[in-house]
Image 1 (cartoon, rainbow, N blue to C red):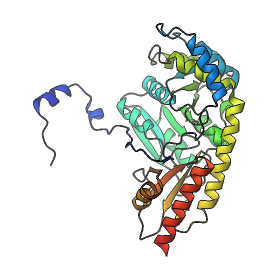
Image 2 (cartoon, rainbow, N blue to C red):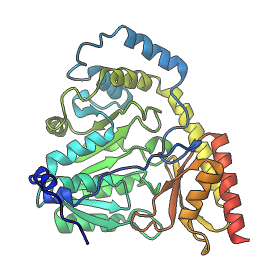
Image 3 (spheres, rainbow, N blue to C red):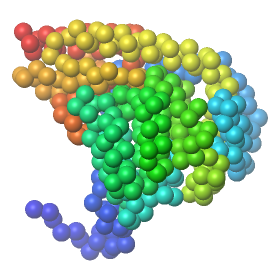
Image 4 (tube, one colour):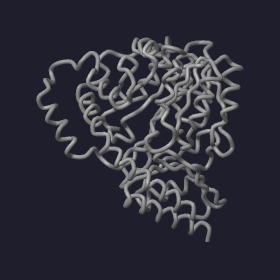
Length: 371
């Protein structure tokens, strides 16, 4: 039975929206593993020569002054890389901040948001915090996108937003160009397309922006650009929409360290893309080798991670998670609480050496269970 709150707690929470109080926070349990393969980070750091250039710029920057009100250097670097006009670009403290800002200017009570699930839980959380209604559309049985169902749901509910994550987290499935075009062209919704993992595979939707003013494309520096610790992301959209979303963005949201580093890394993107190709090659190797291990089902992926299901009756996904961590020092992600992902774990591609430890451990665990 739920225990009543004391008077001080009740008073403190008196004016917090009921819809928020019933939600769970987005959180992650802390671990200190030897091999960390649970957060889809790049296994490679930004190369030293790029860091040295960034440090030299930072050393001459006065730290007692605010950063630019508009992160023009960062925005210009994005514009050059994407060939999208600067007035249609917003940069932020990670693409998550942009998800919050976009939904904040569109979603309110009575507003429907179509979300194919399972997917990144922040979309649902931010919709519900803003008082909107989540219209959940289940993925197909093979965890691919059911585009017909997405379009039908958006039409039936007159949804203001359709959120698409392609490649999708945590499943790895990606939408084709034709599928993205259909969702935009056959609905009246704003299409929020999160492409945090697109450098690793899947269709790059930037060419679709021209002539589709309801399409918004999000990118992050946390994955392919190896900058998860600095928090940087950007949004590409019609300039009129970008202007409205800008109103929900906090002033000085990009510190000058992040602005300088992100711009410099983006201008050295050919170096970073070489690292991305190494990661994608390792991912493909991991997928191929996991496919030879009895007792697990491996799902196709266009991202830098692999979703797999433990299907051996006498072994749970929790057993596999625990043994990988305890016996091999490998931390993967338990995603079994997502809808449709019972008994599932997710592992991101690491270095060759890290992946070898993971594969050897998984093979041993499954062999012992199926012997």
